[in-house]
Length: 250
Ligand code: CA
Image 1: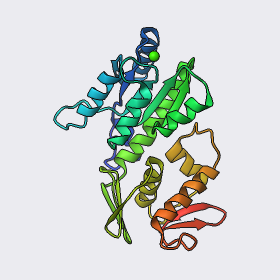
Image 2: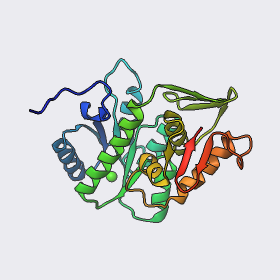
Image 3: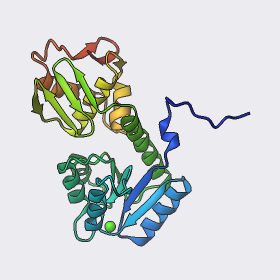
């Protein structure tokens, strides 16, 4: 007989939680289609029509008294009042790293790059298939729950201290600036000291399975991290290369 009892240290804590998704889209037909599909998947969905309303909701969700936090935002670019790119940029500027999937009507490369540069986690161009949207949401939520549940909030190793909730990293007591991707990489490494990660595993964890770039992206980010963290980046103390396998921390 199937037991519904889940052990306390379940490896799949995301199964216990119904994800809450904010859909920011002013076109009613598209919005309704997204909501219907997400609700069919069992997600809780909240919708707003413009950037200002989205910001208001997302900023108030930082207030722990109100139980209205979100696990994911689906954000259209072309919106009344504040556009989606500015919403995204502003949230990241305020150190709000909620996963954001941007929707755009334009397929141009510049838009794509811009969407990711303002700190979005993923990007879909209209018209998109609902199945693809759901698949991307699932992947993003999986990553998010991995990041949310599997860590304590402060990590220390050597002279590095990482505050997960505050998204801050200190080296020898001095704060250092990391990009969101660098931060997530370091958080993952510090969460699993000495574990060897392949480039593909790191891509999956940090960029997602639908990431279109190649594994060199990992090497580039590791190099940047080393430049910020290591005394001698060519002789790394923290971020070590494991020849033929990938990287490990410590
Ligand atoms: Ca729109």
